[in-house]
Image 1 (tube, rainbow, N blue to C red):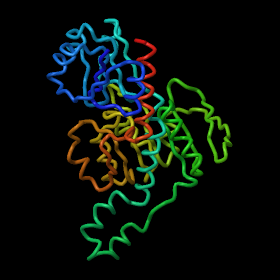
Image 2: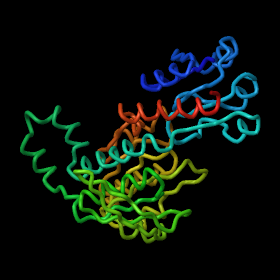
Image 3: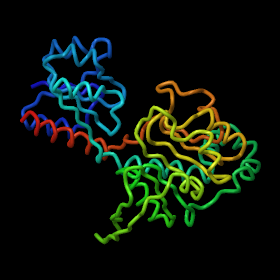
Image 4: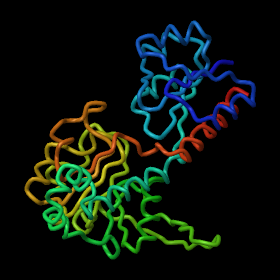
Length: 316
């Protein structure tokens, strides 16, 4: 049986699928040619990440397709309900990339509090001629230790971020509409661990009390964070979005940055992908990455193996 990994799959995933008798095709087929390719090559499973979409037209036009798999968490590029109504299996890998996304959050946090995002832009331009001036400009960094991280959305990724937070010596508070509390098992060295219970709070309280906010919510029809929410945050706070584009009102974000309400923002996802607003890309207080939360070798290996296991259980 043929499987098309149109946005790629790790070698470990390929090996696991081939060991169970599947033929894995990693050709990247253009979206407008995808329906014909699936039908001409008798594809039974289509695996995508964020680049390829699987909408109603594709689902209707590919009667032999049995599985649509998303390497990652968010499935807003797939018409999930419609596919399932048509009898297709729609799968994803919610646990595989949690640690990688959480670590990227802290990359943005550490970079933001020490101005690395701006320094990396300006040192190549002015480092030779304005070294002392840049040193003075970046002299008011702050430590994360002892500060409070507010986690909005306390699922797998939010909990992984909280574990790092605790290891750094920060306080953690969380808001989640669907959870009252969670017990985090924080792994230490030498196979030791501790359990920490976190009780969730209202989002209003988290916004008001946190020094830094990190978002871990699915795609929404409305903004999760807009001007009203920014106004509730502490003066000089910061926000990180490694969740989904569109959960932050970017116009309101830039206004909060320009006014000094926020010290900085870290964005891995954007309202308009793959062409983010130039005002966001050029802002000196925004740390930027191009939607790479799950883009580590370890996460991709776990994603590939998890997809392979699910496909084998369905088709094997």
